[in-house]
Length: 238
Image 1 (tube, rainbow, N blue to C red):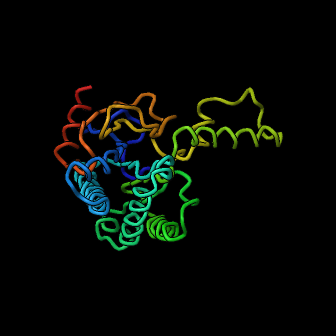
Image 2: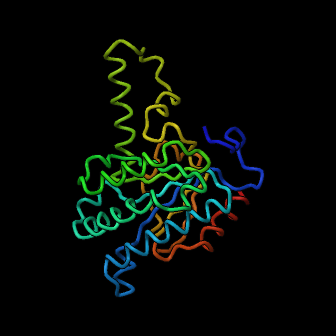
């Protein structure tokens, strides 16, 4: 349940989207073009996340989802390690942020984050535990996430139900698949903001069929409230 928000109508009364998903592409490219280290670029990136959550609260938007760590990034060793290092610091800090507790922000993590090193798993667990009873705002982080794998895993769960004789294959439908994906308990995104290159990212692949997509043509470290507001205003026109 999404607390005080309207989950049945198409829009909030103010016309804002109810769920915005954002890609964080271009961190490494930004570091190179600005002659900065990956560590510096990642720290700036997480600072932007905190500012974006502040904007979420001011705009009264129920759900934000950040595509923090694609599963394929494991193949990019240097950026992966640097991002993990910064993520550990970030998730250690989150449970202590007044912003989170004063506004009752529930933090969730989507993807196979439990396959990551223990030093990042433990801070994530603590953050989830510290915010588990909140329901005014929702912030999701896609970590070690693949949109295709999300659908594959949903199919596996459904197949096990069929194999156990608990489900008739003829009863498999779109609603059942939604119930078995990582984001089963969240509304699909109304708006997906894509930073970096104009290409599909696989973010919330099943849920994004009716989403409005806004391309910023900016690398994530250059994302700010102005870009966010441009995307929201463009959404309102649609």
